[in-house]
Length: 221
Ligand code: E4P
Image (tube, rainbow, N blue to C red; front, side, top):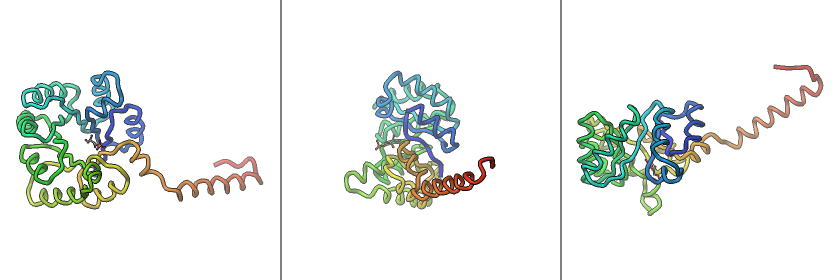
């Protein structure tokens, strides 16, 4: 399963990229707004830091505006994937951009039918927002299972990009189902690395080493 980072924060992107963990990035207007500054600079920088796919989202809600913005966003880098909302105009833009070899991520997916239509329109990625479904008392992960089952019946090239991830358990469940990608907020990726037994184990190793060294201060590895 590929791991994308769901952020426009350059520091976090560099941090996890240096660990070799990142296959791509997803952004959206809210994440851009959170960072402040000029989003163009951030977009350009992200596409340089990351070799994999970088989703940059359109702001327009009608077809011609999406097409214009999509083509402009694509100029930030060859790895740009244009993110369009799951609307009739978004689907039309998805179809047109895809036929011009511009990859598209259809975002704000909340049902299996929406995912099916986005795949039909030629999306490279569909982004079901599982956390927002959980927030309203619906089972977000069930949607991933449904989409996975439907896609496996056909030969779509579309990948399932699990979005709106809230905690590490979401990641394990998405991987068990066989989702293609999860996009994670930096805080979730941080939590995935931690285990109290790792911390305690390391503290014990170091204490035992200090013990050994106290009898022989010259020893080195
Ligand atoms: C995905 O592409 C979205 O940017 C993101 O996962 C939305 O997550 P949220 O529901 O935490 O805002």
